[in-house]
Length: 177
Picture 1 (cartoon, helix red, strand yellow):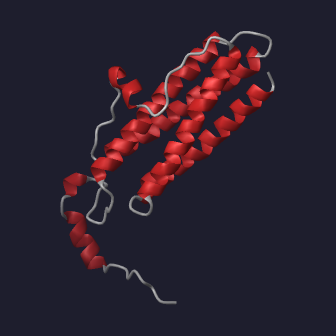
Picture 2 (cartoon, rainbow, N blue to C red; picture 1 turned 180 degrees about the vertical axis):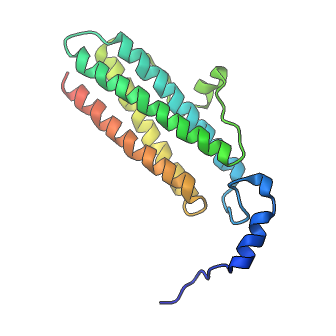
Picture 3 (cartoon, helix red, strand yellow; picture 1 turned 180 degrees about the horizontal axis):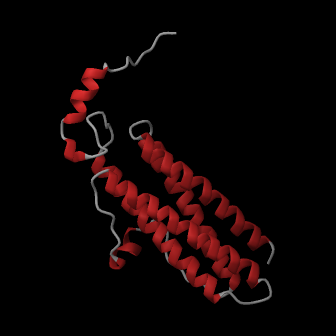
């Protein structure tokens, strides 16, 4: 089997590691457009934080005959969305950026909208719509990143899998109403 990508010798690896050491995890071999990746990460961070807030509101506001099961899902999803936000913020810092937590900018930068919903059905529908937006935007981000930044791609792949589970949960709840 022919190796199309020869391995770098150890001496070269060691020499390159000493260059630009202040860049932390971002080495010379990082191929992605770092500014664009940081922009995508911050937009996704905003999306996750907006979704966390919406799910928390729905958790507290759910009422009606099926509200207990829905509220449990809302709380679980809120906590998972916050975990996603933490992973994204951590990656932003690793890439030398600053995570944007300014509340005035969150809804502007978020892919998903913050729609409160008044009834349980409206709440579930809005959460499902937001999950579907996240699914499509994260798939596009994964395709955009490709092999240029495997760590960021993997983070988005993990989050995408959970967002698909969330959408499935919301679709089941909606079907059960």
